Length: 432
Image 1 (cartoon, one colour):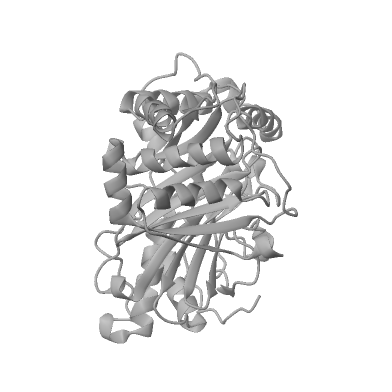
Image 2 (cartoon, one colour):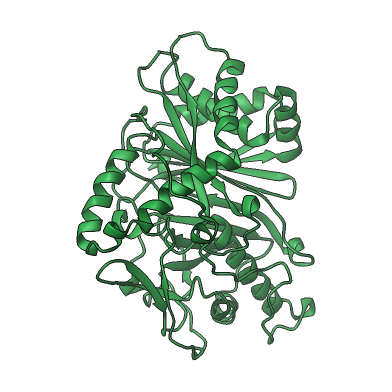
């Protein structure tokens, strides 16, 4: 990778911090094959100037404590401490997305900033924060970069966070935890999407650029939300493109992360989400799209309620608060968490996450053409997708560990049949 010069580091006080409830799992299961790294990228209207991007990162990073850390291993838990090193080097992109982040090769940071032509990509190890927290950081990075490149926008030498930006680092899981869970939520083994696999560490990317007003119109015609519609089309595409309408004894279960911040008035930049499952059971050969959509929409409606989300959060946090578990040495916890993760991973066929409609402040938005997100692969989840809407464009990005693209073809054809304007591009690995 090509690197650029860094700015002098800023002196900071030593600081220690626990990992949040969700973050505790990621160091245990991360590997080169399953990196637990995701990407959020912004495509600008002009070529990226790497020196300016490095300068912007050096200026923005000290304001985001959640990113300015390194991870250490304690006797009972992993923990974060302030990273005394200079900001990581901004690198020119020359590898596949969402690769494993080796802290020893990245000045001990758990994120990277890449550039390619007009694109700025932020890749984050999930232990740091979720997509909403990372998006806040990327926005400020882009804002400061544009001030440096275009001084007429504002004072490029003085770093000031936008008024809508938050750097809150509260552990909202612990703050809003109300009671011990009475019982765990039930799971069952789900359908696994298989096929010819890409080489280790690599996966295929396919972006679909959809006209957002069209998507909203079609979802309204079906009487569902945009997210329910997209997940319904995803399930339909697996049913037709992978299962070929053949009934299966195991359900298609798509995990759907739900941002908990709006439910609790939280502004934390740490992880704060719960996961529900969009379910479809293929018990016949002749389902219509409307029937598949109805199953998926109903499963989401029944789970995305504050009461149910509180139950999920309470169960997860109650394990962390268990006195016996807290006193258990970390190496034993790691063994237990790996076993539990391997069992729970069998309950998911894939994942679709939606960051919603992203708004950038004026005048910066005039310089940003599009935004998208990309997920890395996980155990038993060989097909995933991330959704980001910006201005009048919704970008639906598939990540796939299998070479076959039958599901993606059905997905985009169905959107087109429903009257949605679609254009598609890939990262090229399908042609290698």
